[in-house]
Each structure stands twice: as structure tokens, then as C-alpha cells.
Length: 102
Image 1: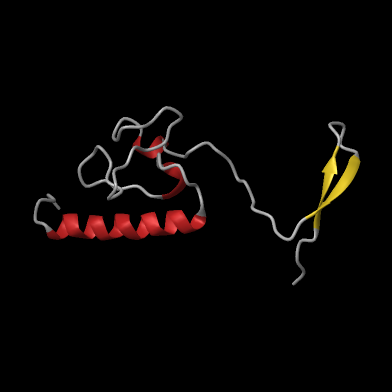
Image 2: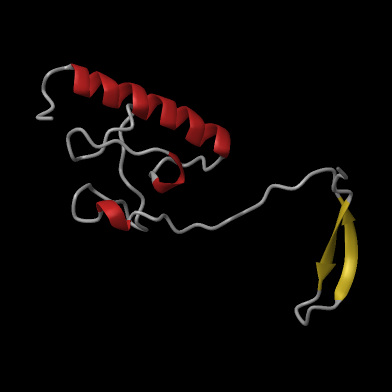
């Protein structure tokens, strides 16, 4: 497998302008959260991000969220993985508490 060695920068008309030497690239996939599933159920921040607390809990008791859909500022895979672990732990704790109606 090869590695990235540079990026070809283009002019506004799409013509190559210059090559920028780099050793890596972070892919940017978007800024719009896919939170329609919980719209009207959990509180959303301006822009549609799901509001969570430190335990990844939402305003709806027993509902947890993690990753780029949340209102947390750092949008990286490693952050989402940590949030997912926290949300899973807290959801299990909620289910084991006896409070959950399920």
C-alpha cells in the first residue's frame, strides 16, 4: 500500500495550481449531524446535534448518544469510540438499576 506524499491544489476553475507536499491526510466527511431519529424525543442543539451530558445521556431518560451526532466539540474517530464505550457502560448501568421499564 502506498502513502500520501502530496495534494494537488486546484484553481477555482479546476485547473491544477500547485502541489503541496504532505505526509498524511485527515478526511473531512461533513458537518451535518444525522439526528432525525431523535428529533422531538431528545434535546438538540442549534445545528441538530444531540445534547449529551458527561455520561453521554440525553434529555430523554435511558437514551444515550455518542460520536459526531453529539454536541461535543471534538469530532474524531477516537473520541467517538470513547464516547461509545461510555454510552454503552451507562446504558447497561441504567438497565441493571431496575429503573428501566423493560
